[in-house]
Each structure stands twice: as C-alpha cells, then as structure tokens.
Image 1 (cartoon, rainbow, N blue to C red):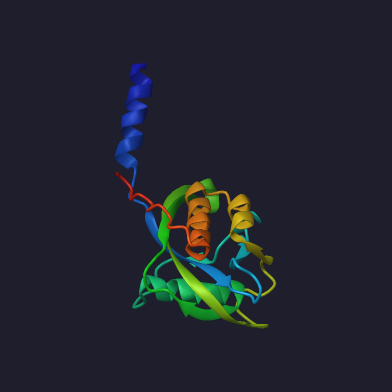
Image 2 (cartoon, rainbow, N blue to C red):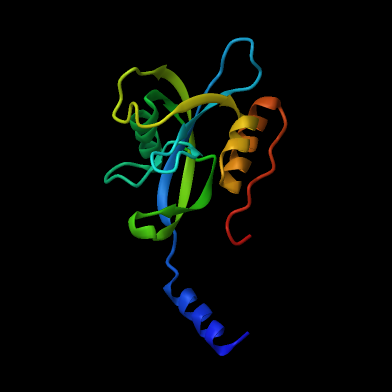
Length: 168
C-alpha cells in the first residue's frame, strides 16, 4: 500500500461517523386460505427501487410509533404494530448533492387492518402486495432480504436462526 493510499484510508476512517437511525415497518396481511403472509412493498420517491415504509426519529415518539406513522404516511395503512423490533438493516442513503450517509434501520412488523384511500404521500409511490420470497427478491439491501425470510419462517413453523448483531 502506498503512503498516499494509506493516508487516504486513515482520513476516511477518521471521518467515518456512526450510522444515522431510522425506523421502518414490514406491513403484512394474512388472507383467508393462505398459509403465508403478504407484505407491502413501495417504490422510493427518488430512485423507484422497492422499499418498506421508513423514516427518521420523531421527537417524543418511540421507534415502533415512528414505524407505524411512516406506514400511514407513505403507504396509507393502519394496524397493529409490534413494539419489539424484528431486526435491523443498514444502507447508504443518497442525499442532495450526491452525499451518501450510513443509516441503520430498526424494523418493526405491522399487521395491516385498514387500507386508506387518502393519505399524505398518495400518488407519490407505487405499492404492491407480494409474498415474502418475492419481497426479498425485489429489495436491494441484503439484511432486509434476510428479515423477509426470517419473517416468513414465523408463519411456517420453522424456527428462524437469530440474526447476529453487528460486531458478533
């Protein structure tokens, strides 16, 4: 390794910041005569890639309440949110000007009981109900793919392997 590349690597490590926290919901529904849940995917407003509802912390709200609120605002769904997260995933969020920041997303499940016809981001995204396998195939983030598989296993009677925490 050259001295310049070593210095560049050291500077990059010094400037690295801890990930920014976000909260998200895997919105799901159970339909009669189906053995597995359907999950709701949305397209992002900027790139059109498949995502789940997520957002930044809100003053005075716990993570699960933020996830519940984002599901309403972005997808127009309401239901029963799990207070305990199913897990988390990391991704790089593109910001204006090309900057990318590292985000850690704490994910909660939300059993959808109502789909609304009017909600804050109506018309800004596409949404689609799919099975967990299809959801895992569509999203880009590897750890989110794992969470969809883990979630599906809860309904199959198979005990999922625990997802290791960062640093394990």
